[in-house]
Length: 120
Image 1 (cartoon, helix red, strand yellow):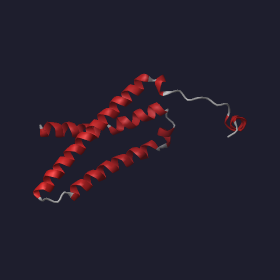
Image 2: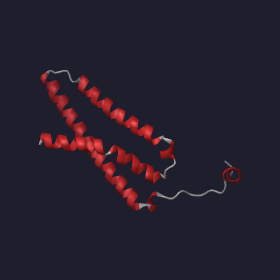
Image 3: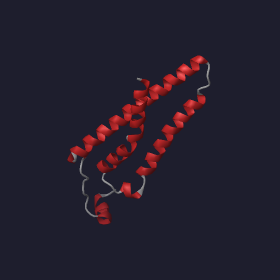
Image 4: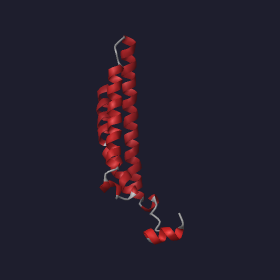
């Protein structure tokens, strides 16, 4: 688009602040995201091992894997829906990322800790 046309339609261009402008928010987002990813990795590993052991015994594990995949897909769909809510869309990018990771983190983290303690 022509810069003059953009300026006439929307006003002068204002660059958005970078993520480095809020290092505390960025650090907290990274920590929550890492906790979520590690928790999901542990849960996926555990589900895979249970399915492998079940299949080795001759049990049907397809339903178990489908339920896990549906839960993960449902959680992802809920986060995607939350990301497109108008109030969330108006947030700054750093704030939006922090909100989404804060919403995503507790469920897998609690499940991972409980299964870690239960498995030993």
